[in-house]
Image (cartoon, rainbow, N blue to C red; front, side, top):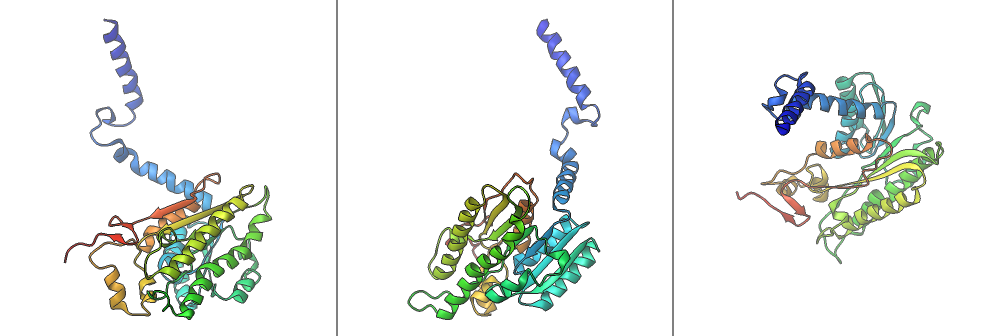
Length: 313
């Protein structure tokens, strides 16, 4: 008797809580489908609020992941954002700035800057040459990088070695050092985000990629050491490691041979630049005390650089 009375009282209480939502007590469909759009809007607006007013530098923004990242930041915080997009191809950057303005309007100010990160002198002059309103940088996305060839030692072209290290390692470090003083002069030891784009290649080297893998391993070591060096500050150091992504990456690797590049992605569904851009913006949009320190992102058909499933032709 007591059990029945308690049971019915409990049901009555639950119905009171459920009453604002039609049929929710019967669970006609998953709760997330009933409230999902509301939850998503709340999450999106919270992230937009955290990103509003930020000044963001993105290297290698003329194509691929960098270009998608600029667009994703603009879409996420379209009311008040400054984007500094850099690359060697200024015409592509100017086109990107135009596309962003057409898509989101005047709330995002996009500054295209011609910059070759492999050139130490250009990196040194980068911050001082920025307009005053763009100099107070909040987020640095070190995305610029490349791979050249598949040669194995002792047949690796010395020029390929030099350009990969100069771009992927020295350029990333030099630009970080150029921007870091801006972060460190802020209160409580400093504040800002450094987001380094690494690779699965930095975790697991493979034949034909010894130099590229070495550069990405160097990025990983630099990132982890920097995070420890800045542990007493509010400067977040983040690494995003993509697996197979379809960009100009393979075209550059094969010196412009599109047929070889296309073969890399044949009979499978690689990640897109937008997939990685969403993760980058998500990491930057977390609450200040949250650090997405290390992220490895694969397409569903990949488990390592050499372990990929391709559908039979």
